[in-house]
Length: 228
Image 1: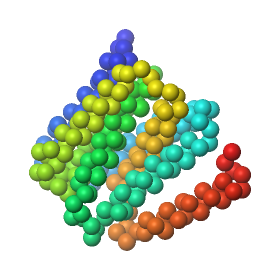
Image 2: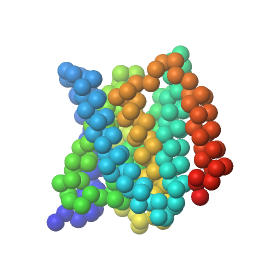
Image 3: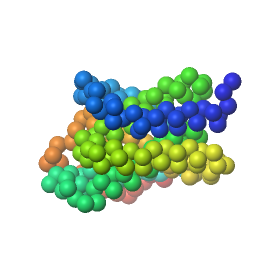
């Protein structure tokens, strides 16, 4: 039977290989929208069938605030996209901000899956391939926006994120609260990232209004005593 360390290594290799082959896939696409939708569907299913049940288990350790962390992950990712949307497409920090975000995103994917491996190695491979398709969609989006710059350097930065997540997974398991918070943040990241790819946000969307709605509901939620 495959050991946990070998399973985690397999996950890292599958996701890491995606960054290596993404330029070839970019040049050979025939139905990009279908591919993106399929990959997004797999990722959304992963969130709702694996990550969110993990948050339910985390509720015993952290309490209901674990869901606020997931919401915060969603809001932060949405805010990054809203801040850098056109006409700020050429903003000099956009490329580096996206690389930093997806570096963390890749690291968290490998790290959190390594902490909560599926019950069988075959299911681990299925999960890894599903996540790899989401990573592939991200690489393709970045290559469409930044071309050779991303191919020559950016994808290797993201590959380093995969390696970093794997390295962290080999270290002694951290405090359960830390694990739960990271898993919740990843869930929020993934929910927005995948929904954005499949259901693109309108160009004239207003992030401040969205954020105000989130804060108003959260305040009522706290003030009325719904959150213990």
